[in-house]
Image 1 (cartoon, each protein chain N blue to C red):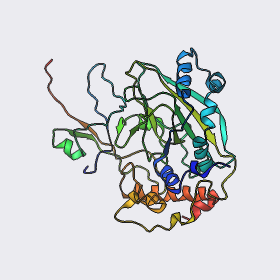
Image 2 (cartoon, rainbow over the protein chains, first blue to last red; image 1 turned 30 degrees about the vertical axis):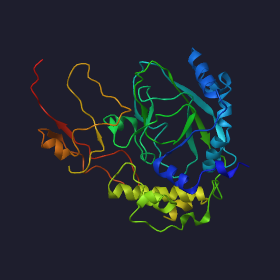
Image 3 (cartoon, rainbow over the protein chains, first blue to last red; image 1 turned 180 degrees about the vertical axis):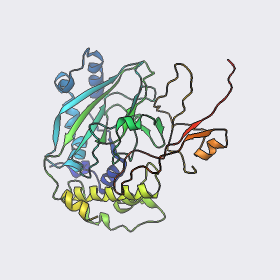
Image 4 (tube, helix red, strand yellow; image 1 turned 90 degrees about the vertical axis):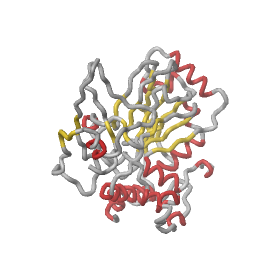
Length: 268
Length: 75
């Protein structure tokens, strides 16, 4: 069992559903991030899924309780570290990467898989950070249809400290900017999966989490589940899209709470 | 037309011109499409308002206007 101090709270889970990402900076052993970054600097070819064999210290990151806490919270105790993982290196002078969703575009209320992006080295704005668009994870968007978008209001560059792990919803829109620095930007992408559907919350859930009333003054700033799921609007879309988002979020919440996916949808 | 712009791509018809995602906060000259119209831009394509519609699902960010502005440039 993992110490509950490392588990996500109700508000953090609700925020993940709404915004599609959650950042963690685990207290890793001194020098570990630097050793991993230095090792990656020297790689001459990309080992693909074998990156964890080439750089076995990466397992220390995955096994840190702060990382396990998020995985248990969103996927259950028996989560799976998928065999697919990838080292994304943006060397100096590399260009930007346009908006895309990974895989095909199939919107799903189930949170059964998501990504963990580990950055062993500080990422500054000129190093080609990953850029995400919070709130886009429920939008089916073929890459070609996004070709005319460039910068989007509310986009967030993951300018982070070395050692940060960004957990991102699998369908979150993302890209990168160009690397105009003289430093390699490293990111290791991990994929995590659920092996069993929840029958109960697996995060640090308090039953009264849903007792909060709708707060028409604070809206999602009230930071309780009901108001986060109801009012959160990171893209600042207008009414009809916002209502659809709200409906999908509650379905996702109920699914994580232990309802079967079909029931979570039908009870809407 | 009067809604706040969610995304804006400026394309200059100049050889070698590129657009790209940036880590810096985008600074746009206009808050709405209408703001751009008052600055000399003309609409060359309206969004496809009669496009297929789904009442429960979400997809791309729609309501995309294409504007054009002609200017004389002296090199």
